[in-house]
Amino acid sequence: MPTVIALSQKKVPTYFCRRNGLLQLSVGNNKGHWHLWTKQATAQCNDEFCLQMARETVSAKLHNCALLMRKSLKEHSDQVKTVYELRDRALVSNSVDEIRGLEGTGARLYFDSFIVSMPDWMCFIGRKKHPSPDPLNALLSYGYTLLHNHVSTALQVVGLNPQIGFMHAQYGRHHALASDMQEEFRFIVDSLVISLIHRREVRPEHFNSNFTDGSTPCLIKYELLKKITKHFEKRIMLPYSFTSLESAVCRSTIMRQVNFYKKAILKGNEYKSLRIRK
Image 1 (spheres, rainbow, N blue to C red):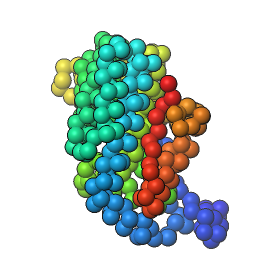
Image 2 (tube, one colour; image 1 turned 60 degrees about the vertical axis):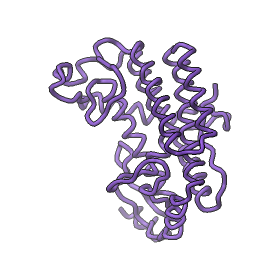
Image 3 (cartoon, rainbow, N blue to C red; image 1 turned 45 degrees about the vertical axis):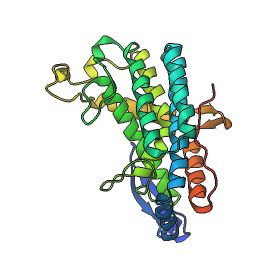
Image 4 (tube, rainbow, N blue to C red; image 1 turned 135 degrees about the vertical axis):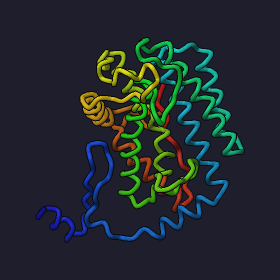
């Protein structure tokens, strides 16, 4: 505590996060960000700005999905080609609603490619959530929650309001901007889950046994939750190669992208989402 007080007196902000990346407390960060939040709200009402962000977000997500389909899931070239075509269409679309439709089509093709590469005991037939009906959906949902928390914390560190988004709908206290930004980083979770399953580090006994009859949601047991959290922390410290970067650690890359997003809002700079290098 004396260290925290000393940092606060020197106006050095300190952030306390849980293991899952959720921001619990900040000390010494009492500076208001009303000017930035006003800019966010103004940008949210700018249809052209929202369209540009949607184009970048969805095209990058589909690019990364197609690459994982080809490299990790050994998917047939026809489906990969279709996802690449959807990516290209998203980049030139003039409607946010159309871009959402392209994203949905691409996501269905992407998750369909998981079906043939997953063990039969997972009972996976497609992406479903709230609640998760099978182990793979449960693993993906938990991983996406970890990612969402880390992105949300990064947004708050730079002063952005995580509730003011540009593509995902706002409701209650949902961090819509974190949902927007996490799209380009979903490959971190997807590649981790695929790796754990292929290495057989995920087994049927890690889940409640009665999910197969549909009477209850599929729940991950505490032992596996701890393992996933640990592996996620290791994964975001690994370097990845991107089309715009030779090599960069994922955690620092998240902060880099958050700062670029901030500049796009404040100064009108063009924002470029991250795409994995082939």
